[in-house]
Image 1 (cartoon, rainbow, N blue to C red):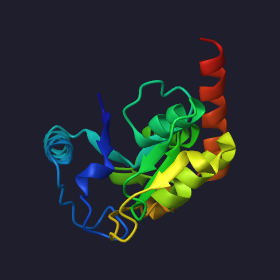
Image 2: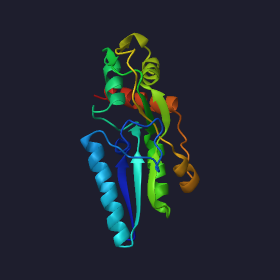
Image 3: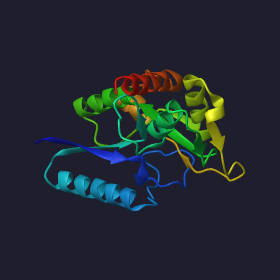
Length: 195
């Protein structure tokens, strides 16, 4: 092979930065992020030694239709609310970066087809957990199903600088957060009705 594209993670950055830029420090705060960063470094070194192009895509929070398991916040919130159960947002002041699955896929293809070497962030919309879950509750049609805890606690941030993706890869996201969430809620609704 002459080119290797690794699926990295925003977890490689940790939560110490307001906006994560590829040239900035990567200081992971959990074992997952440490492992991902370790492979990014190993992969880059191996590829350089063997004259292979290396790119690492650091995905921020990817969401959308098709994520049928209940491991991440968006699927859990949608599933709970569609069942008429209350969803409790425990970190309403956290600001996370969400990217719709179709945009993440298209960005991946563009990176694979390019000659770009190095790290590239694939992110989307920086949004507080409060705003994110309020949109979901609105799409489901019942704001009373949403409750917040720890409202006075400062939030963590994990947001992407996507200028490398835009300027060097030539890709910008096409799906705004409300549209992406509407499609995701509809997918869950259809899935629930077909059971």
